[in-house]
Image (tube, rainbow, N blue to C red):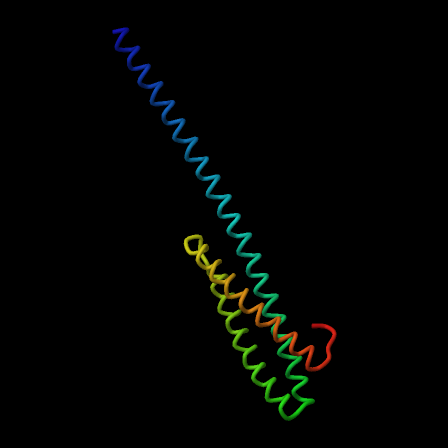
Length: 143
């Protein structure tokens, strides 16, 4: 009987240790998952803020071009009408990226983040060119 009781005690102790190890592993995984979720939220907020700033800059430039188009006529006006249309298309791209970023989930975040960053990079390059053209055309010192 004592051997049987000892066997049960050893088995129960072993099972208790296994259950304890499983619980520790699960809580560790939960902590990692929460950290990952917090990191994703922070990245999402930062990306959305960058997109909103870019959209605001594009809006300001569109307004600036429209103001200058009202003052000028002829070939300059036609060139900037094309530039204005291109900027409006870029703004639509920013808005689409902003919508994607706002609705991104943990599951698709990596893909969305990569796509949005590529789109932003392209738009920022084009936007910089437009700002430089405007500065050269109108002699603005605040590119």
